[in-house]
Amino acid sequence: MEPAARQETGREKLLIRALKGAAVERPPVWLMRQAGRYLPEYRELRARAGSFLNLCYTPELAAEVTLQPLRRFAFDGAILFADLPLLADALGQKLDYREGEGPVLEPVRDEAALAQLSMARMHDRLGPVYETVRRLRRQLPEEVTLIGFAGAPWTLATYMVQGRGSQDHAEAKRWAFRDEVGFGRLIHLLVDATTEYLSRQIEAGAEAVQIFDSWASAMPEAGFARWCIEPVGMIVRRLKSRHPHVPVIAFPRAVGIFYAGFAEATGADAVGIDSCMPLSFAQKLQKSCTVQGNLDPQLLAVGGEPMRRESARILEMLGRGRFVFNLGHGILPDTPPEHVGALVEQVRAWRP
Ligand code: CP3
Image 1 (cartoon, rainbow, N blue to C red):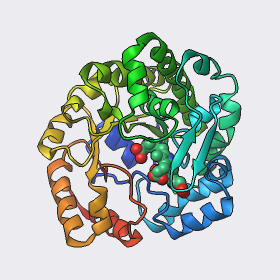
Image 2: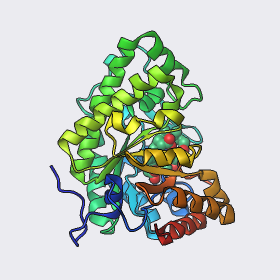
Image 3: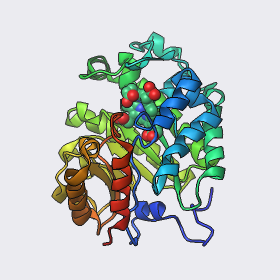
Image 4: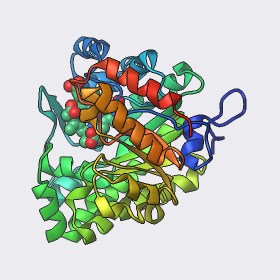
């Protein structure tokens, strides 16, 4: 069990305190996909790395990419640079990245393919990711919180079953609806593997973790309970029993009214909300957990007065409750870096 993330002053870091629901001097800020293609220095390193997988699996490069945005902007958090499908790769599923297409996997659609997956060698394959975390803890500024992450079982399963990103997640949904037992085996493997993966990240130095359920909104009510709430809840409870001081952020993206009760049902300390959630509804969620979000990434790309106005509205509505400023989804690749700088300054200058 590791002690809570503290600065040398002995005080817990701002982002950690906000995630745990303490009253804070100002809302912390970090942005999903804060490392990546909108930064010229990322594109340069990415080209030098040869492949995206090589970038993710080379600790020196992955740590450097994580640090790049911190050199430009005063974020309160740094998110480990890795990618969501790496866990599938570590379980033995063939993973590749194609230019302009994102992750491509050899689809797992039946029990025979499922039987080929195993946790036996996952930590060997993921060793470089844990090493990246260790390096980052040595290299990050003292006040910055290091955030580990993983995909939620449902969202990772959509990629593993479909074999690539899709709009309708048809193959994963049909398997889940047709054969609960078989699909349940895949989800349970992912619950076990994700728990071990995040535990290792925490043991290597991650001070908070985020679970991305980017495609949670694809499921109807019963499916959401069974394939999103239940597995994420199992992971959170297991992590909490091993690492009680480490806050967990869950991001079941765009699930609307299903956000109500989600934090209680899963035990997550914080929930990430998308840009379409009404702030008056988000205020109600703040009574039971920290809310993280939800500036529209397109507003960050536009910048200027429209961005400033909406950010001010979010701060006024949510900034006095349990809150972490973020986007509703990741930074878009064509976002001018100056807009990120202006946003971070605005959030840091605001006071409750
Ligand atoms: O700064 C950070 O946020 C840290 C790193 C990070 C990446 N992906 C790097 C990345 C994180 C946290 C992720 C999470 C991720 N990956 C999610 C969940 C969040 C979300 O966006 O919904 C998902 C669904 C993925 C899967 C994935 N990886 C897709 C669909 C793609 C292609 C589309 C895209 O946005 O590029 C990737 C590739 C990827 N992951 C890149 C980066 C920087 C681009 C790779 C490149 O340089 O070409």
